[in-house]
Image 1: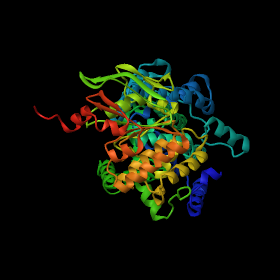
Image 2 (image 1 turned 45 degrees about the vertical axis):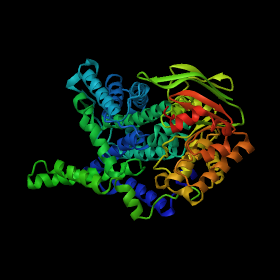
Image 3 (image 1 turned 30 degrees about the vertical axis):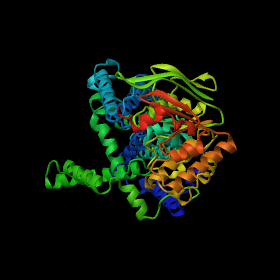
Image 4 (image 1 turned 180 degrees about the vertical axis):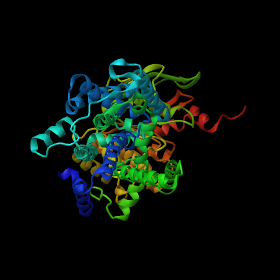
Length: 341
Length: 238
């Protein structure tokens, strides 16, 4: 606990606790539409946090994170579809498959000195390979998709049914909401704690200057691989959630580059390389998107949403290149004190 | 302590380091000098594993470390600075040094204590909490030294850390190295153009030009060597 809040001003700590408590109370007030948007927010925050580990902290650009969503979703989805195994058991193979794939791509890239955009191209290529492979793989339904059986949208409100709903991830929306919200908080805590250890500082050193990092005795290959594997696993958790929440999986949509881009937009807007940037960005962008979708329908202007997205990105890159969170943090007086400063 | 034997490196036919051999004795301060483009930094890169030699060996305490990766060389006990300073820009000075100290420390807390000690040694005051990108050039040079020192090297390779310093700053830096050498027995090999520092610090100077050894010996003797004078000032026309 001490390490979790060390150096954080009291008002920031209390603010954070309040926000989390409010988010946990949200289903008591909101249902239906608002809750489904909140689910989307948390889901994107998890993916953003995962991507940020690799890009924001270790400095390795991935434009193919949809790969890990898809692998997580299909690993757990297929086990459920064929053998009736639940999501929490499916999480283990999802972690293994996504982690192994991340390690493979990372090793191929880093071992042979592929850096920066070239590495990013490699990540896109792998997402595409796997998409095409899955399109032709009959066992998981190929291009015609895989559908998970939907049941118990309404459950009895006794402890056993609720526990069962959480265990099987079959139930009303608020069950999904609590799972993904808890996942979001867990990712936040995990990354925060990691960033206080040797691993976290080594990632920062590699991000800042790889040669300098190496000269300080850091095994760059090992720590970059670790970043990819951890990031892939966190993303795969999002994928497992996606499979059981959405219940329909198509290689074409789940491995699509749009998905890889969608999850990193929030981070850029919120603030790359910060802990709360991915969360703030995911919430801001999702609500903006929803608002625009509604406006778009009212006024019947197609493309308004994408246009505004574009303008928002431009504005952020021009005026707040570090993202919204660093700016908001200063505004709220919640900047972290440096240790011993 | 450190010895290179027949070290050779060429870049697409251009010979940068030519069959070079020299040694730095344990506990001594050696200097590697030569005109611009003589191949001094390439020698450092070959010793630390940033570059792989075509031929020849690098020996540390008699152990062959040729072709080890830079991070392995660091763990073997070779600390280095870069001629063009490589600060970790977005991190504070203290974090920069702490990351170096993590090499030998058990954890972050211990590394932070070690970083404080190194920063005090190099007389970093209030700058310690600044982000590294706010430092002036001399401070960035000092940070290079601090990062390398924090890794607890047995031999420190300094690549032009005095360049761009004012004479008084140079003297301070010289004093720091002299003290480190005397008090902790740290072996130092420095590349330097500031002769004031070379003369004050080193007991043994190795001069190279076009990658080849042209003279070596005590500093006062080397500066009178005809071959050395020729390569710095040019030969008189007949």
